[in-house]
Image (cartoon, rainbow, N blue to C red; front, side):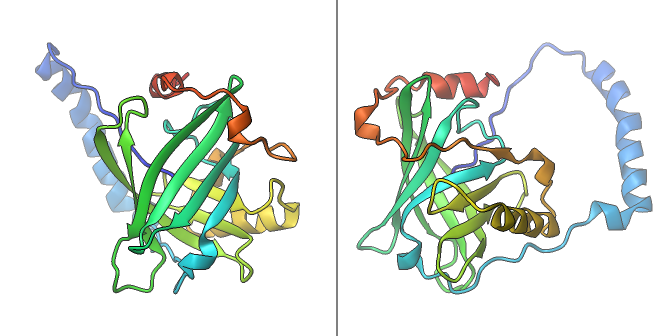
Length: 225
């Protein structure tokens, strides 16, 4: 289950008056636009799967496509996630991808956002940075669609900034892919941002590949490289 993180930069020594003069007319413009176009500014409530069978959801999933994320290398291939159900009902999460000939991975845990709800809304927790995992980061993991056989799934989050199309196999039929893309579009996601992740068949096994233990990919991702 993939993680969401919003870095921030603190700026100092900037002329506040100039900033105010620059922002005020733009803020008014945005406000007027919101008043004049309420329909285009609002979005429907995202529908999620009900009564997800978490035990059937466990195992390996291959990423067919996703929105760009700083938690994934831009040149990563063969991206996949492996989920294992813990005795306490939480889920062990292992996300892997391969970049520059090395295996990149990050581990975390997932759990239901509301144990009493039948909505497939989970929380995922990772510790970053990967080379010194000390800072907890929690994100949303919403299952928007899954087929009856639990072979392909559509995953999103409430802000609609992140989206994943997952499959049990390394390749997905075009008809199924297009159906999931349309589902995401119907839920208000900007599907033009979808990026297909190359998958080889058979998939590589991590033990046979050198591992990036320094987290260099993560540092590059923060700076958009």
